[in-house]
Amino acid sequence: MLHLVSVKRKSFLDYVDLMSPDLAEEVHALALRLRGARLLHLNSTWYGGGVAELLLSLVALEKDLGLDVEWRNIGGDEGFFTITKGLHNGLQGKPYDLTADAQAIYLAANRSAAAQIGDGYDAVLVHDPQPAAVAHFARSGATRWIWRCHIDTSVPDPGVWGFLKLYIDEYDAAVFTMPQFVPPGLSVRRVVFIPPAIDPLAAKNRPLPDDLVAETVSEFGVDGGRPLLLQVSRFDPWKDLNGTIGAYHLVKQTIPGLQLALVGSMAGDDPEAWEIYRRIVEDDHADDDLFVFTNLVGVGSLEVNCFQRAADVVIQKSIREGFGLAVTEALWKQTPVVAGATGGIPLQMHDRVGGFLVTTTEQCADRILYLLQHPAEAATIAAAGMEHVRAQFLMPRLLRDELRLLADVLERAPAPPGERGKDTA
Ligand code: UDP
Image (cartoon, rainbow, N blue to C red; front, side):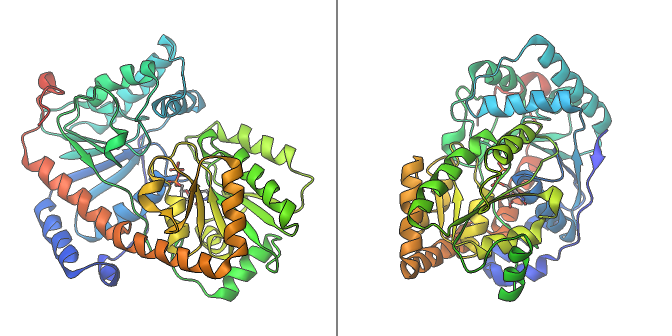
């Protein structure tokens, strides 16, 4: 049931040009401190969505640095993942009626995962709410537990948070992308802030020849001679795909040749996605300039890379967003972005650095039109966005931050089970 995920090999040495010598040296020193420690990343899916994207690179680099690290997925059926999506949505503020039955199903899956983990690890990084209660059931005196939260938990549904808080408070540390995300009343032993990052050498982000980019998007039916808007995101209510489509329709009134591609992966832990996907495809089937692609029709990392490079403007019209790796990826490719001013997105870009932040569909349309009509300025704005990502949101920095935390947590005494949640140092 605890599926072991294998990752491609990566070499940390390949990244030297993307970091300062100090950062490289610190990563090597931290890796030495962590040698011999048994580490586990535990999450709920190996594909689709930002967490899987991050772990594919992080785990590979940690292995290359000589760490004894594994990545495993908590298994579950559709019933379990429907509940965990409810918890996910609840943590992001959507009311969710967490029934006693749902609690029991969630806890049973977590208890069963905990039994399989045993006490063989020195530190376990648990990602997001799906496996959050595993630490409670697996509790052994020696293992250190870190909860890595990737979503915006600033205003959670009180019922959902009241339930999960009991389990989160028991951890040795909790990691959030930014201070605003700390949920009310959290009393975990230690709180740390680490924003995510992208891997510039992954197939998703590496440089590509222009002709490959042009050929690839044209194979999917996109006309390279006409402007293209793009949103890359899961089919999720927080990604406001309706807002994106609405903005496209508004801009199309002025630029009739405009095209929109929606590229959305079906994540293994996201049963809600199919319904949203079906609705979009049914509503918009008459528009030949609106494309909807998924990982199930061959849009993998390389194709996403091509689309992000081919697009004139990338949209990320989210209304809640943990970080938004799809924004970082577009910025890194010097494609201007119009994005919702929410969650982690303003960490990555602000007006005229990378693109524009918006709240309404009308604003979104207005800023897209501006960028399309001022291509020289759009290029300058996009170049500034890329530099911002280079300075703050590349994988070596994230690796350093995580290794620092792990080394530190491992060198402290673990929170004793009965006392967890009481030491707020
Ligand atoms: N993604 C992808 N294919 C798709 C849709 C999304 O590869 O069809 C990737 C996207 O490139 C990004 C991640 O999934 O790396 C989404 O991460 P983000 O932080 O933007 O959102 P999340 O899904 O974690 O809410």
